[in-house]
Length: 193
Image (cartoon, rainbow, N blue to C red; front, top):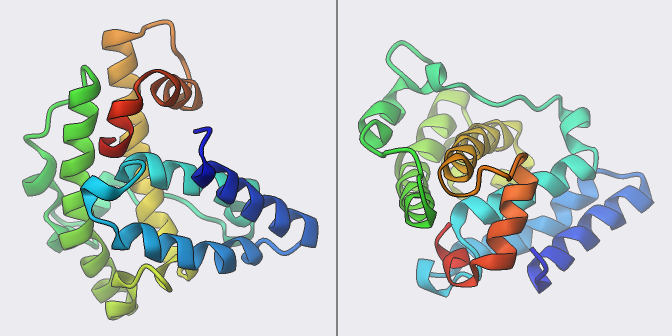
């Protein structure tokens, strides 16, 4: 993403790195994250999955993945018998097909964003004791559970990116390359992916 938003996230990562203080990334990110979630879907410059994908890339770049030992929750965690089974992952996502084109990516983004907003954060917050704070985009980024949830979502996104590329652009490989292609070539789709 070659936008002001990307430049801002990059500056947060660079400042945190220069200070040798990975948590500085989170402190700077909090108001931006809150503002992004305050926009209506139609007013956002980039969609749910792309925004959070970039946030995670810079989280990693700032050294927070290592500092917090962040690992993704799994599909099993959100399925029957898992610790977050009440989040109803299969009921929300089982009928969403793999992305074979940009519309498929946009449809997947909408479906997973709805699950995330209605069930994901709430159930993770209840089960882990974070409560309603997991629903507050100004403070939830300071919780390891937030990152584990978003790593889980990011993993699902990267699966969909691979499905999209296999169907439409088989020459594209890694997630970063696919995201770069989408951002460089499909400007009208950015707000929906």
